[in-house]
Image (cartoon, rainbow, N blue to C red; front, side, top):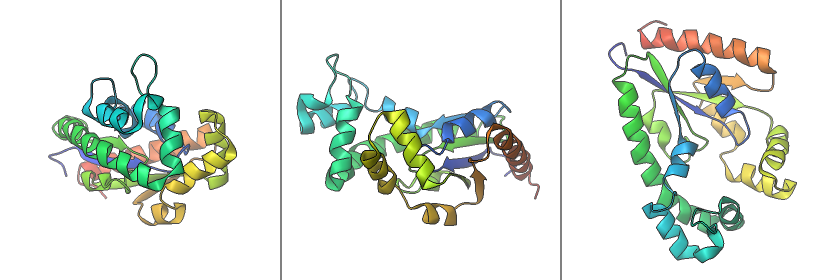
Length: 207
């Protein structure tokens, strides 16, 4: 893989700390793209995905300025799996196309490796776009507490969000590397530094 940038997919359940981990890698000079950021881009005002969402659900999912009311939409799709599947059918292909464009830029850069950070790396098929998968792991009870606090939702909805994702054991079984993010900042920094050395070695044909 010495002639092209190694792409590492970073995933984990909601509130596992994926962005925190990505920023730790970025501090070591690693470029990254976050599928959540791209997901927000594809539902900005004027984007085809937002137009389709508004046609299906009406003004109840729009803010007064015409932007997406994420909380209102979240309540709809997590209450009805069929609506979540419809939303994914509208957004996932558009997200994938934009990720392909960003990753193509990484592939031809001077960086030895780059990250694709995605909570739905496996569920959306985005794992097909990467060379290796790093799973950020925390206990589900911690995910639920963090989600309820961060997103200002009750425990029932937080639990529903966690349950809607791939089960923890299945995600871990598909990992090439696992980072335990329940060890504090110092432990996280040390583990990221270790993985950084490993990925740089892999990118240059090392063990």
